[in-house]
Image (cartoon, rainbow over all chains, first blue to last red):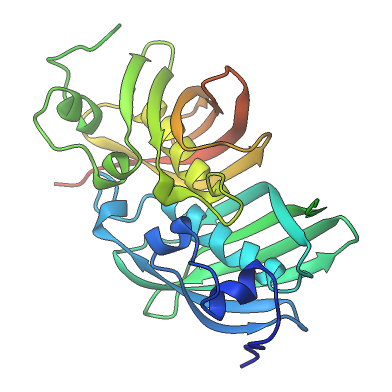
Length: 146
Length: 146
């Protein structure tokens, strides 16, 4: 696993403990399993909480979208130099199967990285190995000023 | 406002206090403003929490997707008879502007209601009246057994 403790930028600063994980990631129980910025791939885990269920007792689709956003986004952010950040322009999620509370694995990848626009894809996997949702996203790279 | 206290079904049972609000709705600070099942429209409010922010201090796009799912879904569910429920097949969100923690308004509508498949749309509005995100979704109607 490529953790690169000396690398800088929001993603690597968080991994090295130099900054706190974002609140959104903590709320979703986000945990890094493996990241390969050279390949533009990432594998993460989430804790799908009882707090995320809908009236029929399965994880509300929107929270699966939040997990997919927090899978696809970091796949890209891990590849960025310190002065760049990525803004999600759109996110499309297809719900293949219901997901129960518990651990879900997110796999994300950079499908195409342009100079300003990047295309991302990924999926969420249940403990039985079945894919519960797939997603694509478009992101816009911006440079931090100052 | 059409509250129809005697009407049955998950949506109306929740409004009348006969069942608890789903955990996902509570986590998002969901609150009904107005619903018109005849028109297939709904207006709701959310409390975009500090727990939902990303590393650049704005609400993580996935949580906006969760709010939109909890806007479009109820617009449809409010129209269903007691023995039917709706499963979201897909959700597409476009992020127009960053959203800060605070109150966000969700407006949802049933664009087309088929016998089994329904098309939904809606948007999230910031306190300054600007639209922060728009969404479309496809839902599949199913009948409760037993």
